[in-house]
Every structure is written in structure tokens, then in C-alpha cells.
Length: 214
Image (cartoon, rainbow, N blue to C red; front, side):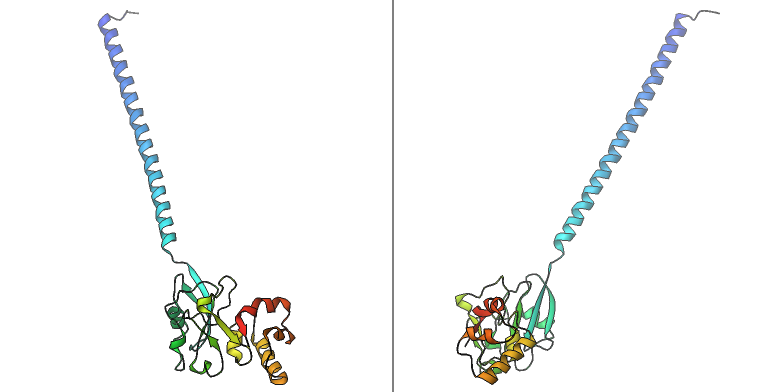
């Protein structure tokens, strides 16, 4: 076997170096492409997550309130968080012709779980007592205490069934019992006497005592 000349050896070495260089370059390019692909996937994923979070933040929260009184459709209405009484009125089909706007603040901001009573013109004649301008007339949720600037109380000696049921915890059945009691026994002498009405025990009395008067 003939020995390779020094020129041939040199040529083989050079060729080998070139092949190794090409291989290293090829692998380096593949690695960079893989890295870029991974970075792009991460970036796209983060972008999608940010977009989803933004969409979630942009969706307004929903609140539920109970509206009664001088509106077309009394009952439960769903509104966007930050809504006003006027929004609840519109959701209930608008006011009736006997609504008393002098006794309601339509711009009052409402909260989830509140009960709102839209007063009628006849309410003053029937003895319902109200002062202040909040317009949360008959709202008796436990989280919102009526303050001294917006004191709202229902006169249990003169209130009709709708006014009595505007108090949270007093349903139609209990309201009818209150009316029947005073028709039979005369006017309540004090608010504690309401405990004599069937269905109103100590617990229920404690829940409503701050919102009734005689």
C-alpha cells in the first residue's frame, strides 16, 4: 500500500476541518432556530394570557337587586356594578304614573343585594315616614346601615302590604298578619309589640327593629 504524500495528508486534514466546520455551523443554526421558536412560543403564550386577563378585567361585574313600588314590573333585576337607582327603574320597565320623584334620589349608587322601594304619591297620605335623599326607600340589607342623614323607617301602624314587604325578612304572609293584628287589636303601642304577631320572633324582631316605627 502506497504511503500518502504530505500534500495528500494536508488536503485530507483541510477537508476534514471543512466538514467539521460545516457540521458545527449547521448544528449552531439549528439550535438558534429552536431557541427562537421556543422564545416565540413563550412570547405568544404570554401575550394570550395578558389578552385573556385584560378581557376578564374589562367584563363588568353583575349585581342583583330587588325593586318594588311605583315601577311597571316589580321584582329582581340584574345590573352592572356601579349602577344607579335610575338604572334599576329602567330595568323594571320604568316608573308608574303615581311615582313620587320628590321622595327618591335617582342618582343614588346601589349595591348588590339591596332592596329598593320607589315611593308613590299616596305614601305620604298613608303615613310612611322618610327623610333624607338617598332614595334607598325600604332597603334593609344587613351590610348597609341607614345613617342619621338618611333615616328611613316604616310606620307599622299605617304601612300597607307593599311597604311592609319592602323590609327584608317580611314576606307577604307576615305583612298580612301584621295588618290583621292591628285591625283586630288596634295600633301598635310600641315597636316591641310586633313580636306578638305570629311568625315574628326575637331574631326577626332584632333584624327589623331599626327600620320600623309607630
